[in-house]
Image 1 (cartoon, rainbow, N blue to C red):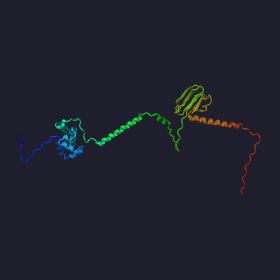
Image 2: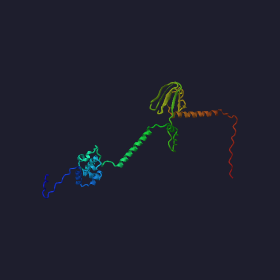
Image 3: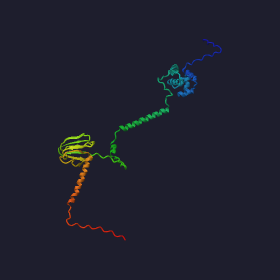
Image 4: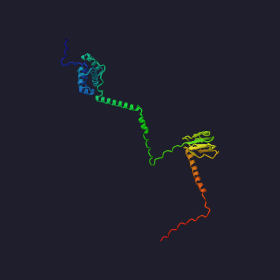
Length: 300
C-alpha cells in the first residue's frame, strides 16, 4: 500500500472534489446557501426524492426515467449543467443493479411544468363537454325536419301586424301598374324626363306595354290618342287627348293618370244629376204666394 504524503504542520488537507452527480448537486446547493426544502419548492419535487438524488440512491425513485428527469430539474433549479448531470445519472444507473432492469426510453417532463391532477381532470371534462355539444349541434343541423314539423310550421298562424302608433308616418303608397294597350295600330313614343325613350315605334292592335315602375316623370307623344286604352292598377283611364290630335309631353305616371280620371268622373256625375232636373215639369200657372213668417210676439 502506498504511503500517504505527509502534510506539513498547519496545512489543511485538500478537500476531495465530489465525483458523483448527487454529490455535485449537493455541493452546488450548499455553495448557494440553499436548503433542500428550497430546491423542493422550486422544482415541485418531493424532498425525500431530492435527498435520494443527492445520495445517488436511484433505487428509491419510481424508475430510471424519473431519476434522470428529477436530476435535470434539480440541476436547472440551481444553475448547474443539466445535460452533464443527466448523462452522469444515466451512466451511474446503468452501472448499478438498477440498470439491469428494463430501461424506458422516455423521460418525464419537467415536474415544475406538469399541471396538477385536478387541472388535468378539469381540462379533460371541458374537452368532453365541448365534443358532446358539437355532436348534438351537428346532429340537429344535419337532421332534416320531419313531415309533422313542416306541417306545424305551415299551419302556424301568421304573426299579427302591429297597428301604426299615433303620429307615425303612413306606409308608402303601393306603386300601381300603368298599362297601355293598342285597340288599333298606333305610333307612339314614351320617354322620361331625361329624354330616354322607354317605348318608341308602332304598336300593333292588341299589343300592350307596361310602364316601368322606376320611370322618372314619363311622358307620351302620339297622333292617335284614341287608339290607346290606358289602365292604372286595372282601372281604365279616360283618353289622353282628342281623336286624331297629336299630343306631346303628356304625363303618364300613375298619379297623373289618376288625377285625370278624377275630374272626368266628377264631370260625368254632374251631368247625370243635371239630366233629371231638365226633364222636371215646369209649372205654367201663377206662382203660389209664399206665406210670411209669423211676427214675433210683443214683449209685455
